[in-house]
Length: 91
Picture (tube, one colour):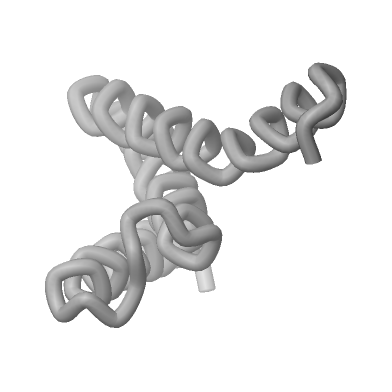
C-alpha cells in the first residue's frame, strides 16, 4: 500500500467518524456536551486534517483544524470547570 492510499483511508475514517457523530447527535443517542461526541469529532477531524495536509487542500485544512480545536475545547471544558470550582471551594 502506498502513502497516498493510506492517507486516503485515514481521510475516509475521518469522514466516517464525523458522520457517525452527527448521526448520533441528531438521533439524540449522544448529547452535544458528552465526551464521546467530542472524542468522535476529534478523531474524525484529525483524520480529515491528515488527508487535507497530504493533498495540500487549504480550505479543508483550515475548516477541519478549527473543527478539532472546538472538539478539544468541548472535551477539556469539564476538566477546567471542575478545577475552577475546586479552586473556588465549590465541590
